[in-house]
Image (cartoon, rainbow, N blue to C red; front, side):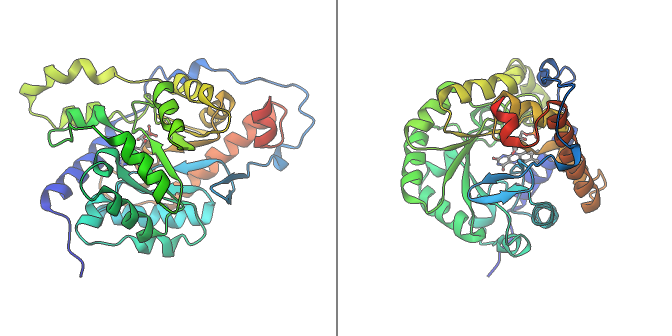
Length: 339
Ligand SMILES: Cc1cc2nc3c(=O)[nH]c(=O)nc-3n(C[C@H](O)[C@H](O)[C@H](O)COP(=O)(O)O)c2cc1C
């Protein structure tokens, strides 16, 4: 029996989608200050540059992930259907947004696995929910529902602290993640949502067995700003000083990579194109994630969906990434990362 999400959850999810579309990457983006090596003697064929990358035991056409955005409402499901179909066709990985609302209201998103039978699909739950009552049960249900290849646990204390209805009690999250790592039948990936995982946090996660992190740093979608905009005018001055909290993407990648060469690091936070993606790999990431830019491409302001525009965007990002490798004189991701 399928129930729908509460009107409150639907309103919040819709507001998040609408406000996230207005949250543009920083004008002075920190990746603009990073230069890639330029090789005037590439000795390789641009058209044969290979972007194939293995992730969670599956070969992707390129090291790209559409990171978790939404779920649990009709609008979210319509967006996720397009994302799943595209992930299957373009062989990129796909993260879902938090599955809490859909699971708690008895809705299944198993249809997404049917649309993307061969894709890497990543489930999603909040750290504070995982640490709550029945958190592990929810985590198991999230994995089972979409036969997830990994479960992402998002850490978003900045967002939750500013969100009018946010979770403020973050005690016990690390030990809940440790239990999930030891119990679930798939890897646990830990991510931020746009304020960045610091080296210190990544070190604590690595120490409890986490092997996959998405640093999801500052530079793109700004959840502090989005939640501030959902607050009454009278509250805003109180939270405004915190809008610039968090780490910038190049710094977050470097801090995470300094923890271990064996971690799988996903870089996200304002990635705009394939040259940005190449810079993230160059700085030490294994894969690159995009959310806000994908959302703005797939759904216009009138709520119409554009699957073709999304495919075209991914094609362009892949071609730009290929060109970046060629100009560095490298014919594969592996060779590029070894430089
Ligand atoms: C509309 C929207 C909803 C999001 N919801 C989630 C979520 O439920 N769980 C999560 O882990 N991250 C969520 N994120 C964060 C993204 O996965 C990503 O980490 C973040 O937006 C940074 O990437 P970007 O700058 O490319 O948008 C959401 C992002 C957007 C744009």
